[in-house]
Length: 260
Image 1: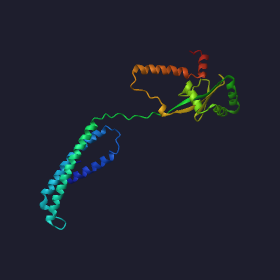
Image 2: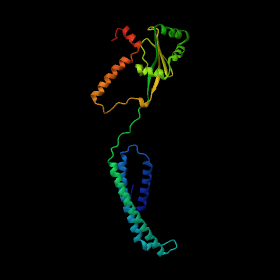
Image 3: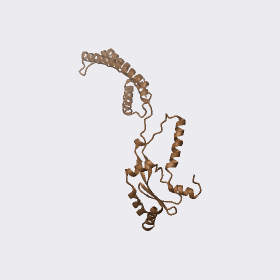
Image 4: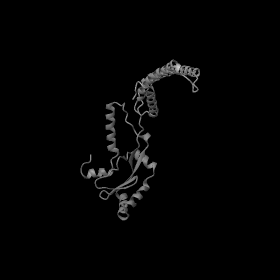
């Protein structure tokens, strides 16, 4: 805390405060804080100008007590005048710094800082690799009974042709937040793959987890009218229900008498 009467102690406080500011101002988490910092610096520079003038005046007025290390008063008085002149020049330069700080603060005050734009988050979705029913599924179901589900899952991976499979799934709407499965289906996972199968409905399906590039992720437009956004949401929801309907789920609905 400043003493307001001890120049030596208050100079030490000012030095430590500036050291702290130099460290803290290496980065600004909130850019709007810079305006207030400039205001405090401007006040500090004005005080510094006053301090330099007062130091210069004190050197000149105290010449009668000035000596060099050998006791020479004339030499000491001469150095006191040199110090006073240099301090006056420094005060003049501080005036220029104050003018530039004023310009900087005015410009900073005209800035409306916006929140930092966030990069789209990475999104992962399950895509349909293959869906087998009837006789085609019987072969895989027999393999599950005979060799185990891991063998069947490895066999189904042969239907995965990488980007070609991904593109086809995207085009046909076979994209899911979670792999669809009916109440009578078993689910087996293996890394980025998941197999579902049902003896009751004679069907087998394989899904693969796909990472959508951040630049391809759709970002909601905050400037879109509310009415348009609601219409878009209803349209997407209807499309999702139609495109992403899993045949196994549809079969379960029909069996239970709840199909549309």
